[in-house]
Image (cartoon, rainbow, N blue to C red; front, top):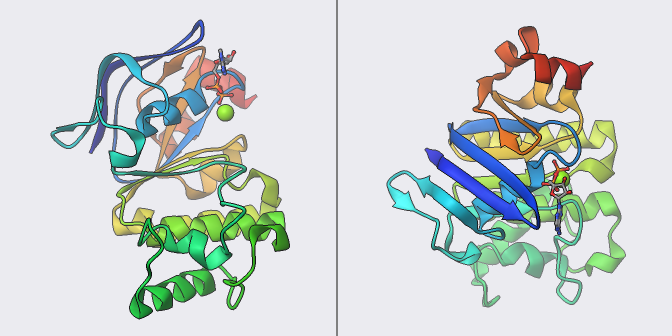
Length: 229
Ligand code: ADP
Ligand code: MG
């Protein structure tokens, strides 16, 4: 279980507070723009230090760990691939950070590319891929990574509704249902309705505890209701 015990994150003058436990499965993070959703994910990933409180994975305190040491893989909306590496090399980073891939590892890379609908495109540089294909390749890398916490910050926002739904279904089937803790920020409440087990509502610098998605939408708090409209 991922827990944030009385965590405060500072980003300039902005403060985000979180006292939450995130269960395995698919958790959506929704709320108004500027409320602190990205700050929450950055704190879990270690890009923004917590100025107080502790972030823990099970009994392990992550607070002092650098981003690369944490059991976390994160996908952003842009810039998820290194432009100088081929698509296969970008995906292979999940298996071998120095890119010395064994034959079986190369086959796993190709299988992951097939999984996301990019069979045979491993030799291309990202500049020869569409935006949607880049998103899929980045997802393939996360699928191969064995890190148990997966953070998606509007990772598929550029894809359009149909492709985004396809990617989120893939994330749910390959990651959340296999026990990984997937936390996805989305600006579309329907993504949360359709794919999430839990919802964390973030507004005005507060990350509210996860609620079962169904309960969140059938009986929203006044603040969530005013956001949902
Ligand atoms: P969200 O992802 O919910 O839209 P963010 O976590 O990105 O919100 O931002 C939360 C708040 O932090 C915003 O209101 C913004 O004013 C502030 N903020 C974002 N980036 C910075 C920054 N680099 N320096 C100072 N304040 C920032
Ligand atoms: Mg954001």
